[in-house]
Length: 273
Image 1 (spheres, one colour):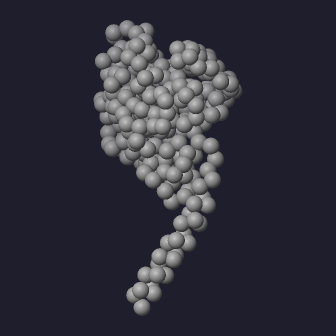
Image 2 (tube, rainbow, N blue to C red; image 1 turned 45 degrees about the vertical axis):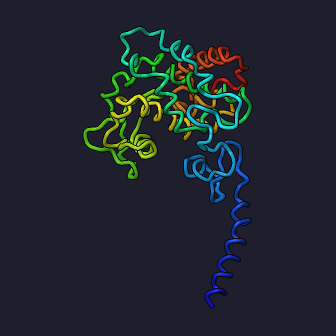
Image 3 (tube, one colour; image 1 turned 120 degrees about the vertical axis):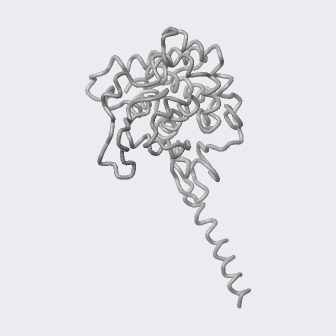
């Protein structure tokens, strides 16, 4: 009897394998999880990811797995320090943001700038740093200017409730904002984003990880649509609708074009939103 049950169980497992695999026809930018479903979070792109922009760790620190170019070889010390050279020594981010901290953070997100051609990968790096340069004004600001005057709390979010006395204003390279971002970012990175949002402004590796978490969660998958799509994903409500902040949008585009030129790649189409 036991052998019959075991045989039946094995038969069911064999039958289930091909059925799960049928769920793996994901659209571009989405990962096929180990269970055969499509998505873009770590549950889909992390351990066991079968296809798509998986976040596998085989590429090592700062590398682009399976590619002929590494993030570290593109984001050279000269490139990184060139961004920081503009504002001046008075900036709070001068001694905080470092290339080493960035590369260490990239090690936790090896799906960053992965997939497509070498030009595609360089365009993603250019796009990321174009937004970082704009959001922090050349890696000058860690905290949003006058951000403490508004706590950026959405009280209606029951999954990520605001913690008394904490403000969820912009911090870090992409100015992470709102409780519904700090909560899941902290859980993914390994700190309490709701009770200790200041951690993003205190630890440079965590700070860059917060930016890469936001990028991989919200921006990475739209890169094939052009730089304009990344603007929509980061600040579309303020810069893409009604043209009320068109100057901000154009500033991001200028940085992107500058970095694409430095990397020797065509910027592609659909640059504005």
